[in-house]
Image (tube, rainbow, N blue to C red; front, side, top):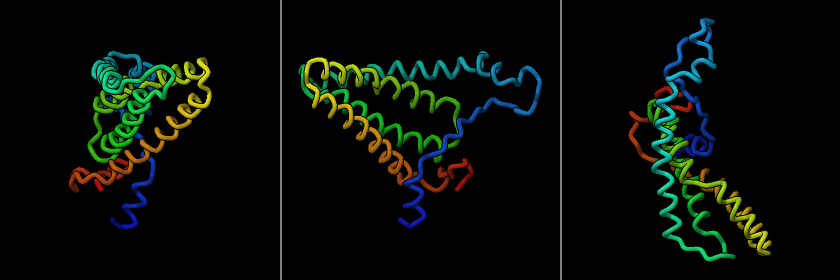
Length: 181
């Protein structure tokens, strides 16, 4: 791996958030008004992609809690590993979807927002922390709170690096601006 590849692997991705249906944003006609597009029926298909991803991500999270049994008053390993694995996959996946594959209206909403949004769980992370604190496990609660946040950042960072280093062939590589590399 050359110096340029090593430097590029450490750069955080820029999400162009492509609106593949958008026309010229300089067009002042009412049909091109941003609020009209945002609330129009064209967004229902994206919402359906998010819902389908969420319908698969939530049962996946539930299965993780069945695989990793946690007793009351102990470190919430099930939530911890669910969130950490989701963070890694999110970093990896976003690199592929933003920088390595052609823009898609549905893949990022389906996987990143839908599946991984339902798979990972910030709310359970906070409830687990609050429960540990309420039950007098202050050191464990604070450790869990900080370890989860730090491990999540590290996992997404490694996911970004892994996504950039994944060998997919030159024809699938794009620069961060979306042009062939």
